[in-house]
Image (tube, rainbow over all chains, first blue to last red; front, side):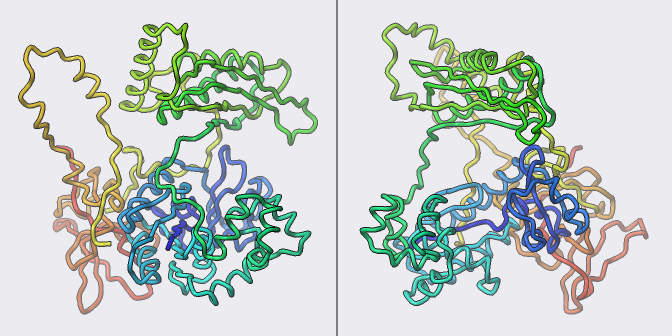
Length: 419
Length: 142
C-alpha cells in the first residue's frame, strides 16, 4: 500500500496557524509580487475565486466579502512543511517528499488497519502542526492521490481514506474526471476528449494497446496504476534537479541597465547557491528579461542571452561575471522590463566532471575555497551578508504588501501573546 | 506512531569545521575522539515538529514567572492538563493563563496576586475557545 498525505489549501492553512480567528473565514495567498491568487481556503473557493485569478480582477469581491489577503510568506510555509514531513516520517519508514505540501509514504510490508492509520495520521498532523492534512491510502500512488482528494470532498472521512476494494475503486473512478488524474497532461486530455474518455474509469477501460500507442510510457503507467498495479517508483532519495530557474517580476518596471544588472546578479547568486547545495556544476546559463505583456500600448521585447561553461562551473564569481555579460547582451534601451530571470541548465554532478586538460588546477582550487567560504559565511550569518557590489543591497524588487510576519523563522517576528 | 523522530537539524557546523581545520596543534588533542557538547535546543525542544515560540506581551502571569518580553516555548504535542499554563485562544485573541480543568468546566486563571485588574476567565460553552499549546519552558533575559 501507498499513502499520499496532502496538506489542504496549504499556504492558506499556514496563514491560519497563528491566526485562529481566520478559521471558517475566506483566506487567499497571492503569488510573488501580489500578482494572482495561488492558494485559497475552502471559503474563498466557495466565493468563486479561482486558482491564478489576477488580484486586481478579484479586488472588489475580496473587499465585499472580507477575504483575508496575504502575500506569499515562503519562510513560514517552508518551516511548516518541514514540520508536517517530520510527523509523516515518524509514521512510515520511508517518505518521498513530492512537493512543499505533498508526500508519499511507502506502507509496503506494514500490517495495520489502513483506514485507522490514515485517519490517525491526519489527526496527528493537525494536533502537532495545526495544518489540516488529507491522507489517502491505496494499492498504487496514483490511486492514493485520488483517495486523498476524496478526503477533501467528504469531511466525514475525517481526513483519512483507505480505498482498496474493487467495487469502491470502480465507484470512485466512474465519477473522477480523467483530467484530474495524476500524470494525465493537458495534451492527453484533449486527445481523450475526442475519444469520449471523460472519467478515470473510461481511461482504465481503454484497450491496453491503444493506451501504449497514444500515450507512450507515462500514460501506460497511469493506466496500470489505475488498475491497482504499482509501477511508479518510490523515490525516497531525491536526485538533484536538472535545471534551476530563479526569476521574479518586479514591483516597478526597470528601464536602466544598472538596475537590471543588480536584479540579475541577485538571481544568479541565488541560482549558484542552489547549484552548490546539490553539489553540481552547470555547463550553460541563460539570462532573460521581458516587458509587461499586459501593457499593450508600451513597446514590447523579450530578450535572452546564453553563456556556456565548457568545463562546468559552480563558482560564485564566474557565475555573476557571466550573468552580467549576458545581462548587457539582453538589455535594450527604451524598454520597461517587468520580469527577468536566470536559468541554469546542463547540470552534472561535480564528482563526475573530468577536469579539462588545460585547466589551471591550483587556481581552481583557490576559487573553490573562496566560493566555499562565501557559502559558509552566508549560511552562518544570513543570506547575502557577503555579496558582490553589483548586487546592491541584495534585495529583490518585489511587492509583498500583505505579508504576514515570519513567525517561526525570525526572532523579531515571534507571535506576540497577550498575557 | 508513539516514537517521535525530530526532523534533521540543519547542520550548523561548517564554520566551526573550517576553523578547526586550520589549527596546527603540536600534539594531537586527546579530546578529539570524545567530542561531547551541550545543545540547548535538545533540552528545550522535545518535539521539533510541534514546538513553537511566542513572545510575552503583558503582566498578568508575573507570579508564574512570565515577564514582558520573555520567550515562551510552546509544545502542541503535550496534552492540556489541569493546572497547565497554556497559550489559549478565546474570543478572537490569544492569551496565556493557567488552565483549570474541573467538574465545573474550564477557568483561565491569571497569576498576578497584587493586581486586582486580572480576574479568572470562565469559559462558557458558547465561547470560541481552544488550547493552542502547552507552555513547557520560559526563556528570560536577566
